[in-house]
Image (cartoon, one colour):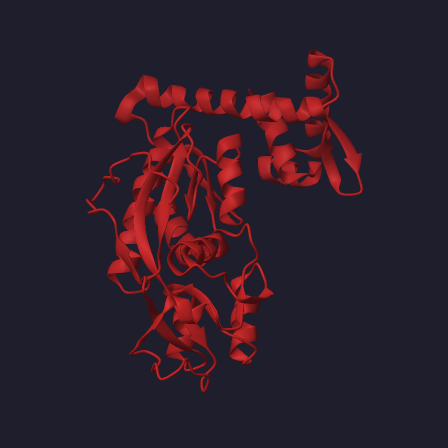
Length: 327
C-alpha cells in the first residue's frame, strides 16, 4: 500500500521532488521505493522527459487500478469502525474555474475546521475535462454543468442559474433597458457575440437553444474559452456576450458592464454534483459531498450566488441522489 501511495503521488505531481515534499519523504528513499516496485512487477513504470516524470503504458495501467486499490483500502476503517472512527483520508474534488472562485475557499476552510483529518484537494478544469477525470477515477467527486448520460455516474441537480446578455455601458439592444427589460433570445444571438468555442459546456448550451428555439445559428464573432478575457473584450466595446449572472455580478455592480435578462426562452443552466456510481464512496467523500451542499445553500441564501436551489438543504444531509439526463 505504501508503494502504491508513493507511486500515485509521483504520477500526480509529475516530479519526484514534488512528490517527496508532498509525502514528507526523502527523495532518495522515494526513488528506491520506485525501483523496488518496478523490480517486483518486472516492468518500467516511469521515465524522465523534458516535462518531468512521465508514465509508461504499464505505469498508466497501474495508476488506474492502483487508485481503486488505495481507495478501497482507505474505506476499511470506515467499514470496520463505523461512525466511531474520525473521518480521514484524501478527497479529490474537480471544480470548473468559475465555481472554484466562489466555492473553494469557503469549502476548504469549513472542511479543515470540521474534518481536520480529511485532506481536500481541489482540481480545476473545464466541465468536460472534469467529467473524464471522474470516470477515470482521477477525482472522487465533482461539480459539473453538463454531463453526458452514463450509468457509471450519479448526478444530483443542485442549483439552476440564469444566463444574461451583457455589454459595455452605452451599447444598446433596440429599446430594451439594461437591468429592467428582457431581450428575446433570437435577437440576442444575432448580435456580434464573444463566446466560448464549440465543445465548451456553455457554448454547446447556447448553440442547442439557438437551433431548437430560434432555428438560427449563434453569431459567434470571437471565440475564447475563458470568462475573464471575454468580459475584458466586452468591456472594451468589441461585442456582446452571454454568461451566468454570477460571472458578471461584480462588473455590473461596479458599472463596468450592463446586462439584460433573456426571454423566449429564459436561459438557465443546471449545476450538478457528480459522484461515481460504479465504485463505493468513502465516508470522507460523503462528508465533503454533504458539506458542499451546505456551502452552496449558504452562497445562494446570502445572495453571493444568484441562483435557484433545486433541493431543500437539511443540516448534515445531502440532497437526494439520483441519475439525471444530460439536458
